Image (cartoon, rainbow, N blue to C red; front, side, top):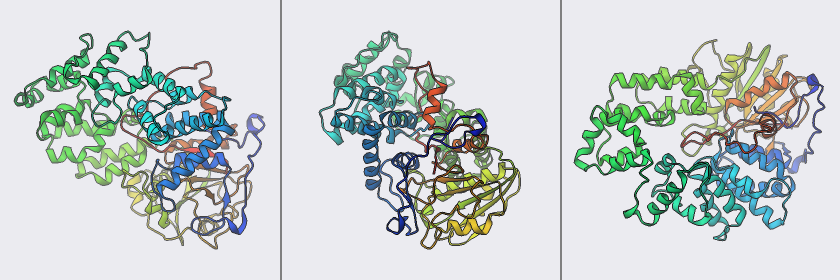
Length: 562
């Protein structure tokens, strides 16, 4: 459950947390990057939105990747010493429900480094924080590689012990086949040598696995998988098949079953065949592919010419609501797949998948004004360096979804000017997206003044970088007792509006944050998301959380008070 640090609590008779101090308004000497008047965020708000609004080392319209990384590390080091409980909670949540891999790994290293330099041991232990951000089996190696490249080869004991804890949780035969490859700078054997992880006593098979991982790294010619491990032995048998016999194995009647028993991914299969991934090869491996892998390979399926029968099964999985929910893919990934799909046979299932991914968007009662930022900076930035989708795309997806789920909504695009975007209830989201335009600068207050007509709430999806001559606070035209919700999609330092009991700032690109509107308006006491998480899991300390989806990294939705 995503929740805010503070806001309405009256309905439950719970006194709200005291407002956090803000260093603003800062007056004419502090402005947005576009030159408009701005407020400065309190450090926790700034770090929170920065962490969820971008990927590590990703350049944005107004900041280089290095500038954003430096700002992130500086804030995290500062708060690791001043507020270790809050910072540890952020990092744990960021890798878990937030599903942000790189930011959590870099952040955990900065947390430990700052606390060691300050000589403090207050709050959560360094070891536990390192362990909390390791949720995938390649991450112990990635964290060690980052530490050594950033801070040197002297790895402190808390880092080693935290990594060893993660290794015991995460190293399995399946994860070894997927992640212990030459493309990784730190192999499983390298990690084991450095941190000296002992096997988990509850996993009697892990000792043999560790020995095999060490042999694979240091004595590959004599490395033999444990005979007791059916997955590793099946993979070895498959790899030892003569090259001229491999395609026959794949295309045989038991080909898909043999590939699945050996844990063969499509990437491993492509290298093992020493030949093209034709229709037969794809059809053999498709049953074992995850939803993200299917999304990435739709063009390959069409170019290889997979059969209509297999394509229908792929389409069925793509549009299955339970598959979509289990994959934890963000809505903009389905939009990207739809834009890049080479044939129309994928259009309908991808539209349905996008709809399923927005299932948690609330059905807001009453009248809602939704404003979507279509300024130049929103078009320049992409949601990740691997995605062709811009923040403008993501803003339009969520704004449209909110409008179509609301009882009565006015959907508006804004920039230098503004205009309503027409839509019909039940219309596919993708059709509505075609009506959005590019609109130049960021005149948020002007758009609010023009379109606010006694609505019950206002939602603004933006990067907050208002233009010169715009109001110091775009929410001023809205009565103080009417809630205004801002979704900040970039995590910049300058804020366009002030905090208050009915003014809320969210961050990120996932629909999960939209659930907060209903909670806030129902009078729920609001907290940081990891505080709520801690309450829900009280008494379950030490339980292993679910890992993020394989090969993915998303941007979460979060909430702050302004």
